[in-house]
Length: 67
Image (tube, rainbow, N blue to C red; front, top):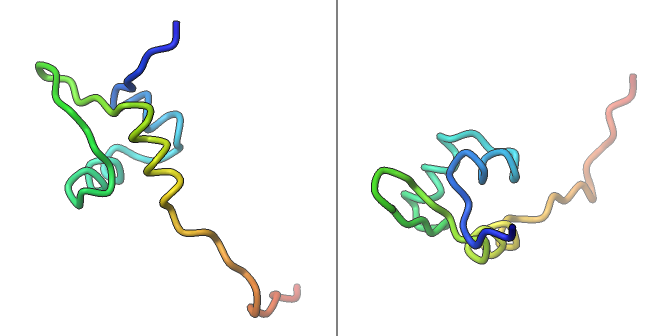
């Protein structure tokens, strides 16, 4: 089955973020969520847009720690 929405738990598991981070992203408007009864759902398309909007990790110009 290809569900078009993720529960908050499924979203957190799939994107490796904690519930507080997910709710913080929802509160700031960076992640769109809908309520169905008591459940918070995140549409797959919205999750993909959110993931694509994350900043890229840049390490250019940083010194490497020598051990």
